[in-house]
Length: 121
Image 1 (tube, rainbow, N blue to C red):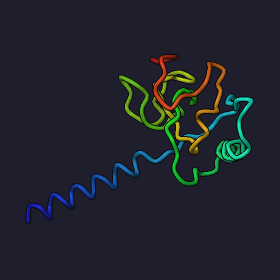
Image 2: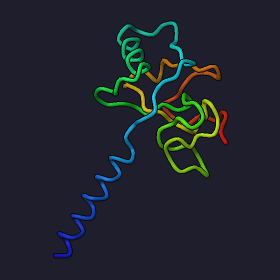
Image 3: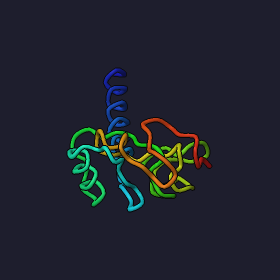
């Protein structure tokens, strides 16, 4: 009986975590793409920029959100979504369509699939 109870708790916690970590932030008009970006990435980026939901698997893209507009994680002292205190904060991410992040350029430099050392609170 205890195993069944633990399994139920685990499933409930997993469901809550999945809902809590859904991507809600999107692009902003200060983001551009590198000059050598392929057409498929351009299309995915344009769709994401206008607010379309990410189709398929997304990726965590660091350093692209404006203050208060990140998805989860914004470094030490912050809780989650919407907690970035600086524009293009390097330890805050926004979910992007797969393949797009490597091509994004911000006014503060390129985006990254891993945390950056710039603009951190």
